[in-house]
Length: 447
Image (cartoon, rainbow, N blue to C red; front, side, top):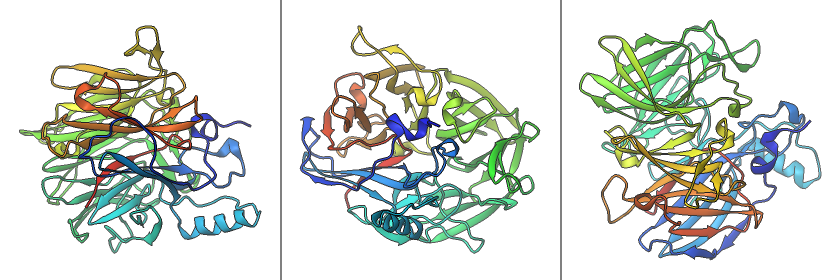
């Protein structure tokens, strides 16, 4: 039986590749110095394709090193946990590796001088070297209860602290963990959940003073050993002071949250921009929902959550200039693809062509959008924001994303100007191989 998450733009790659001095169309800004890294699952062995879903698979990081106007190298590397190392040795001997427990495969970040591959829930991250080889498990954010940094840990640009909301299957609580710039845990606060059915706490919101948790009806049960939608489960929004204390739970109608764009405090209320969808949601087929960009205004004193739609087109993987994380923001960016629901078709820069793959720039102050479209088969993933080192404005910088080039059977790293979003790419770095659609990544500046 076929499976969309093993085919086409999702199909895994089979080799680790290193290539130096990559060809470039256009011109890479000379003052950009760092690595664009993106993580995703890359299955090593699939026993039953019909049972496979996107989040299964050993983590593989794809990276491009940029310096002095050049693309110095491209590398892709598996995150080599002990299980992945064992599976790769079996493959080298011509043996079937069977099911491989996923290594960290959701996100890759920089913190405390380290490059870290993150996994869903609260398991240990793995540290990666400058050239993306695996150093090993890293106890960043680890607490005595067994929690650690999670898939969507967030850095507060004002303090340099890393914030995580970690959960473990079957535990009746999650934890908000604060880790300082040196990598030391400075606070861990328990967040009580509804019994032993663990909700899918994939992402959370962080404002100047609060942590916002989304207790959704997609819950893990030990009986089924899987996440399932439970219409009887009371959906809630939890508001926790960052300084610690009690969680204020606000009941809401059932919903599904995939990712948060940003959040900030506005007087007595909290503004959260996020990607949400109606239930039921199926963790095995995230493309079956139609996520949209919404704004929630949360009043923890009155106990209200006001919800309104910002953009009703199917989209996901929202990003903001990270210098404005936890602060009021004007701009946000998201990716559009048939993967995220009903295909989004719009006129792009060329009036005679319509696009089902695009990146979108949202001007949330004026309620307008700009669209940078790509060809119909040019699948595009999440775009990370890279600030202009000599700039300072919120949209003074670049968006970086891997985009499929179906004519070459490979991928490009596309660099767009955030201030000339619909214009031609500033540069296209031509990779020698295909990068499958994956999850999350970052622009990590040089030391």
